Each structure stands twice: as structure tokens, then as C-alpha cells.
Amino acid sequence: MSLLLGQGAMLVLVTASVRGNRILCRNSLTDFQRNILKSCAAAGLTASLFLQATSSDFIILNIIEWILLAAPEIMVATLLCSWREQRSRP
Image (cartoon, rainbow, N blue to C red; front, side, top):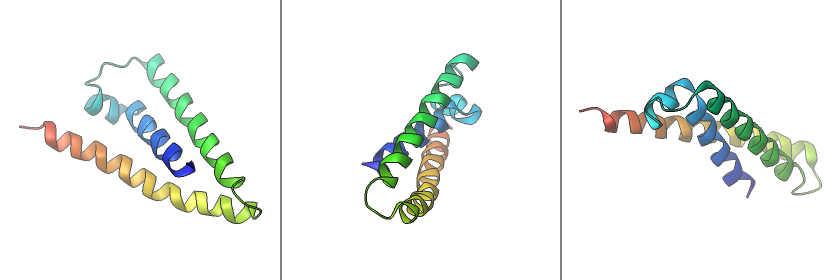
């Protein structure tokens, strides 16, 4: 559950970025809307960390595992954005 929540938050964070707004939303988001999305993504990542940390008795190991799982989440979100950009070019 933590992994899915983290991946969803990363995709929202990518959408809220300048590049993601240009590629995924065609520059339709205002700065205020992008800031709201960034706040929601931060809340999602915090919830993901909380779920991961409380999943078993070893809190420190769970936090380290969450940090290590964040790298693939970032890569998948970035690859999705790049794939979408390449697909939209003629």
C-alpha cells in the first residue's frame, strides 16, 4: 500500500512540475494549482512514509527501505513524463 501511495504522489509531483505541466497538462495549470498539487504530493509522500514506518517493529529499517523505494518511484514518474513527451512529438 505504501508503495502505491508513494508512486501516486510522485506522479502528482511530476505533474506539478514545470516540465510535467507543459507535457501532461499542456500548460493549463496556474501557479496556484501547481502549488496545491505539490502540497497534496507532499502529504501523500508523508502518508506513504508513515505507512512504511509502522508496517513492522523495525522502524529505522522501514524508513531506510522507504528511502530506497523512492528512487524507483522517481524513475518511473520521470520515464512516464519522458515517454509522454516523445509520444506527443510528430
